[in-house]
Length: 144
Image 1: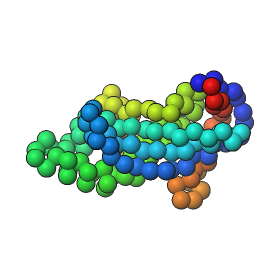
Image 2: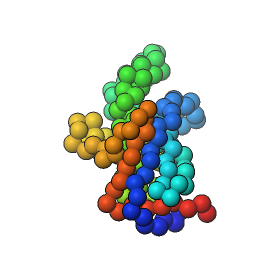
Image 3: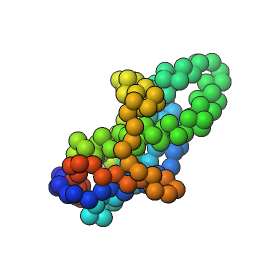
């Protein structure tokens, strides 16, 4: 996806958080609509693998596994949003804003730093899940 530099901020709008049953297991998806400074829009999906969620939150693998997992994902919804927002900001900064990005077990260290507040979103919350992100160096996505 080609990018072009600009100096205006980005709008990042929370759309949904849901769990999906797929052949790869139960995935936790957080979707944001990202609007570039020039007005281009793209839906970005941050997908948390089942292994990441199960291992990060130490969800027991008993017969109530799905119920435990669902309860933790609901209780930790704000954390999933924060993780997703931080990752979207990182992708904007790197110029690789893909439509879909996976959070896997290799992301444990990063996730802990975000959860403990060592890394925080730089965006400013405006209203109802809408954030403004104005990085020092910004990029623009174009449709191919």
